[in-house]
Image (cartoon, rainbow, N blue to C red; front, side, top):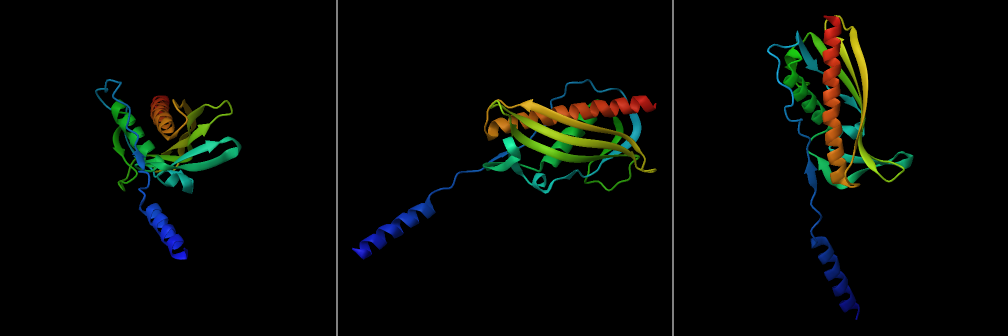
Length: 201
């Protein structure tokens, strides 16, 4: 009897170990499609380098985070980003700046080349945030600083807090909302930089 019980337990244990684990869905954020006609020449003759984004340790990973009431946060188990939020935001912003031809030369954070202008940023939030009424949204909180790379003088600072409604209250809905919020952040930051350049001309 004991042998039979042991055999059944062993079979069940092996069956549990061999059960396939759920697959992980990986998501990315693509830049907005071209909406503006490119100007004949760059708005500014200066070069701009985008500095590496400073962020929280949790947002430096590829985890897809949610935020519930009471500041309870966690990561979706079977969903993740293809890259870190900071990298995806940077790519979206670069595409927006290139489309509008804001600067003559645009350098990514991976470049070590010297530039006239430097764009620094602090990413404070990038969450699928749930609201008290049961709805949810993609929420981004990021601050940008445009700096003169030679004099180290700050030319302008702007904080963007962008929220975009999620179509569903799951990981896929969060991805959709954060994708929209990222594109909106890029569009607003681009417009802010254009205004800064025009004010200083």
